[in-house]
Image 1 (cartoon, protein in one colour):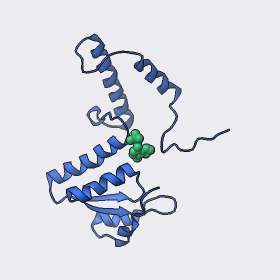
Image 2 (cartoon, rainbow, N blue to C red):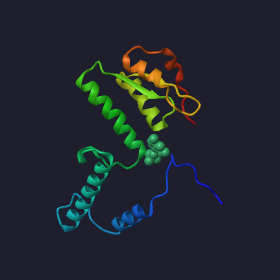
Image 3 (cartoon, rainbow, N blue to C red):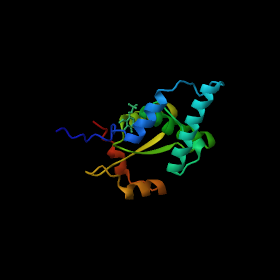
Length: 155
Ligand SMILES: Cc1ncc(COP(=O)(O)O)c(C=O)c1O
């Protein structure tokens, strides 16, 4: 019997989530439309946004639906970088674990090449855990430069 272990890539939907998704997929309506079908679709989206925000301890305005992981990573990493460096051009440092998904690694490298980001790759141990001592030193501004040798990429 096959055993599925790649939950980092994707994970089975719970029966409850599958039922909710199937129910919504069977309905027609664009949440941007002004007629009844559109308003119903808008209500479903906003109810989902509020439920997710409550579960995450966030404000609904902080929940942004995207089409997938790569888009989410780009939005989070570039959005945070541009928000910070836009407020204060000196805030250009990015600390990033060396074993992130390529959607994160490539986004950070792009910011380094094109947007002047100053990147520190944080090494991880054999279990993939970031060395918190090195992270604390980087955050305190007394970097342990072994961290710069830690960019090992990802398979
Ligand atoms: C952190 C991370 N980013 C991006 C992706 C890629 O997601 P997508 O194929 O939805 O763009 C994955 C998939 O495993 C992921 O784990």
